[in-house]
Image (spheres, rainbow, N blue to C red):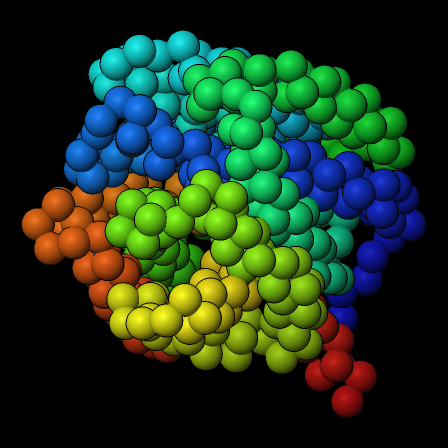
Length: 409
């Protein structure tokens, strides 16, 4: 096999591109994690919602997020040179949707607002990761993991920022004022992205795009990888929605304590993501994914039986090493299968696979209402372990680093 050679044109400006994408991803996740871990439990208490109703709010975000991701995949490949506009639009819509959620007085209006909340953030990933993949074909896993590291930094800061804001403002006011920093961030990312040298053209026509997409969807390995991603998403989303609720309501933790626990988990992820990305480049995606997926499933199960606060904290921190690291490696594996074709759409396929995960919080909500919140962790762990077994049956292609080492040997 021939090693991947990177032209000077592709290398041009790619470090600036990476810095911009990582910064924007961190900002996006400050909002997402603050909402998920701190504000949603407060919304549940403030509106007097059941666990099932909370699950439907998570469903609404993820459902519209799926459709937005699919559309963003097409736009990211057809109009790759407009990535700056797409990223700026993503952050702007995110801020506007938060403002509308803060103004929703009832459950059903909140449900409608959450439909829009799912749109903005989902427009970010396909053009951003597609651009990274095109500029870093020789270090794809590591580059995408850096993007994920930006997300982990945001996940660390989000709960702390949201909890800090709640010491001065009510949850509705926190959501409303969020629109202003989001619009400012959108302008900054748009300006930084526009100044990246070395323009990358998009697909020449809709026909050529559709031809590439048809070829991609005929690959059995790609379809199975999407299925595994969907199962993993089902297990993970149920735990992510109900873990903050479990800490807040079942264990009666303060808002600040919940923020600290969840932020500490993401500190581990900041270090783990680039390390796992590097290892997946060097030793192959599957050699990293299988043990990590198995450990993640077991950690979900362990949450239900963590008796002491120390054991619970250590379990949550261990989860942080895998929650987002795995997702970035799945994306890199899918791009390896695609072989450089329609990179943004490949991203949308993996993110879109989480569509099955949209119903999972509803299932978990019904389980929580009938058997207790901690039962959702058993459900999440079981589904994740099933996904691990299916993954073990797949044969994934070699990475660029593996090919290079094989040709050198």
